Image 1 (cartoon, helix red, strand yellow):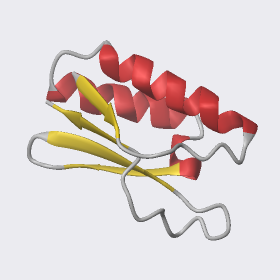
Image 2: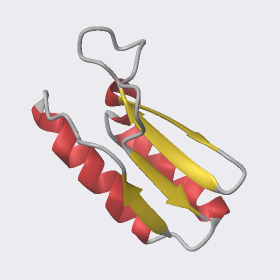
Image 3: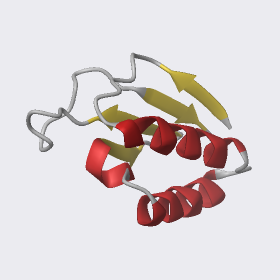
Image 4: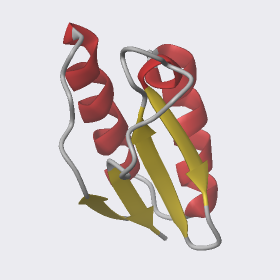
Length: 85
């Protein structure tokens, strides 16, 4: 998998670094879209991924945006990361 960090990661909570590092490590160990989807689901269950980030899938990529601390229903305008598969 090819992980591209596209913007700053705002570390307003001590858990964010651990979640991002765990997610990136898990992604780098996947070999295809199916494994990627499975590992992201596991990461979401075991960490605060959904609390701090919004993510989704395109036809050939996975994207992540960071939620705003002031309003977790909103995200920063730019993507934090994209993974092409």
